[in-house]
Length: 87
Image (cartoon, rainbow, N blue to C red; front, side, top):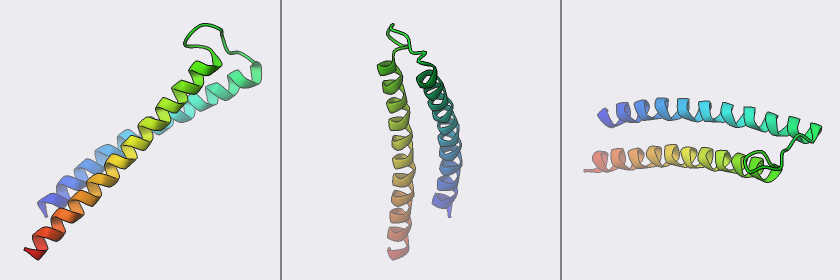
């Protein structure tokens, strides 16, 4: 039962972090769309279209990593519980 409690705590924290990061990504996507519509991209590093695309890709990759980490924690906990029950 302790492993389940630990997993619940981990999931609550992980899902909260994931949701917060998702909101950031959505906000940044909206900014990108606005810049695309108004042709408001700059030419300097950090405000060019390429920089924005890289930034969005990094946010998406971070979310994918967070999701995989949560999934892996679930799988590992399930395997541990299964082993304990079979022992």
